[in-house]
Length: 272
Length: 253
Image (cartoon, rainbow over all chains, first blue to last red; front, top):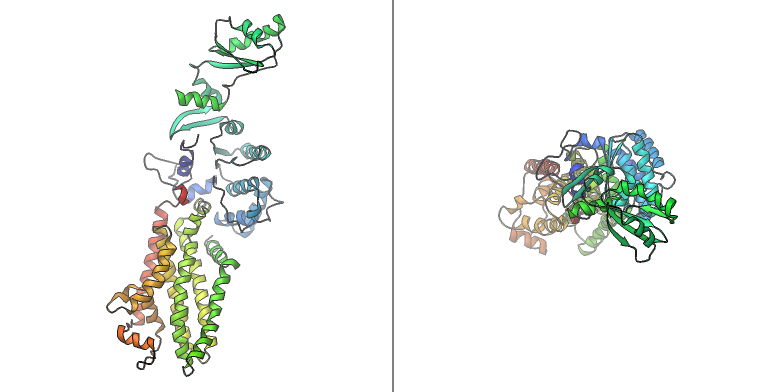
């Protein structure tokens, strides 16, 4: 959600701003203007601004020099990280001519080049097309596979789900929930689960299931292609579905739960 | 790392787009000298050089400082690229100190080229005068840039304030009767350059004005001391200020 306080939190973590209340500690130290923190932290900002006259290679090399590396080491690290983010072949062009995806990769490269323990990314998938998103997420997953910690801020919860299982939900600067998706899901157990069955015979399916004691509500799709149930005992409900096919010979195309995504959980938590 | 901060600032300011206009301005010194010769046929080379360096080269100095000093921090904030600098493992004071040195170098280079152009085009100049002017230009570049960098840390749109200071205050305060000249940089740079006086009566408007308004002469050692204190104070305060306060992209701040 916009205005939740994600970017402010990230700016606090990356030491760009000071806290006005409470304490922020990163690696046990106050992050504001603290070089010790920046040695161990990589930051990929949301902003899309660069030194447009530079090439991607010059930009990343410059950041490497500013990270304290001598020429040869900076060159070697620049090439290595450009390779890693898939920009080695295209890094000699001026940044001004880069696509959104290329700019995001260069931003990621400058965040990774000093081999930080933690990388913080602020809205990394903004403006990327679906293919670009997939590729970017793959790069992040490869980095995570090396044992690094990646913190991603995003208001597109669907994207967050694709990138990570460990989630921290913020709303208007307050922490709503933290944990993996199943833990967060358990926070809304008091709300009925919604289960959708796609079938060419929604009325027959509804007739068969509506009598079950744990079904609270039934709703038909206006197109007549699916039916949605609400239940507080989803496991029992799922157990009952095979009998529909085996005993009643009803055709079931798919079974899904609209609640099993972060977006729905967030909505529930905010409402509660 | 320090060397890179300095050299990257110098390279940034020496980009063709930036430096080209300044080179043109510096080379305009040839035209100014030719104009002087055509207007005042019997003037000595030293007189021509002194007049042109005072009215042209030492006017370019604060203008260049006002514009170039914004590249140290203000422009990075404006372009939102400051975030890349502030999240690298560099103490902020080093960042501002070495970038200020870079801007000072280029400001001095522009003024020095202008002075050399004037010296070449007014043949017969004493090298002692030129040397003192180059020293004054170096001191002036450091003084103006460090002052303007500090101003840019304090206020938005600092370039306008700096240009007003450079043109209005620095031009008028030294000739106003009283001690206001002590609050200018020009007054002290005059003390360092120690230009000979050529006023011999009401020969021209400048002489007449000088007689009416009076002149202020500052001893060279006082000028060096005052400028040294100003430069050190501005740099120290800028380093401390930049390390203490938040610098964010302005529309997000």
